[in-house]
Length: 117
Image (cartoon, rainbow, N blue to C red; front, side, top):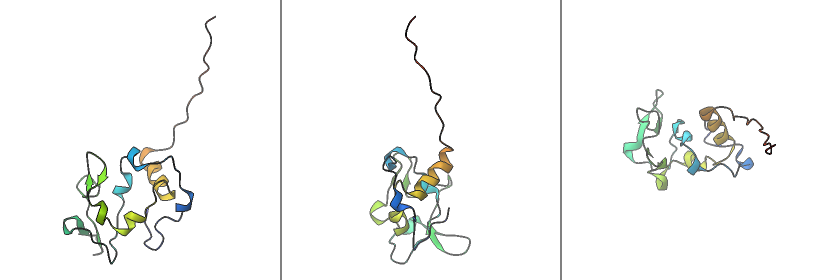
């Protein structure tokens, strides 16, 4: 998934309120995040991609360097990049990334409960 800086989540108007960051493994924190003019991300959290564009750095495990691995919370939340701030929790992009990470939703098998005979 590529996040468009001008329209980071075109499906943001179709938010699924059942999806909460607190119930996630921060899968969006694996996405590449281009830094925009005005972003004030700390220097230790910055890197450059193969094209020389400034991005948020990734750790060896593929997750954002600013992600706390124990709480799955952003350690630079107050100064997170605008693209991260605009990424809508429960929006289309969020749902797509969760589906890609967790796989297709598992269907439950209906079970009939029988009374003792």
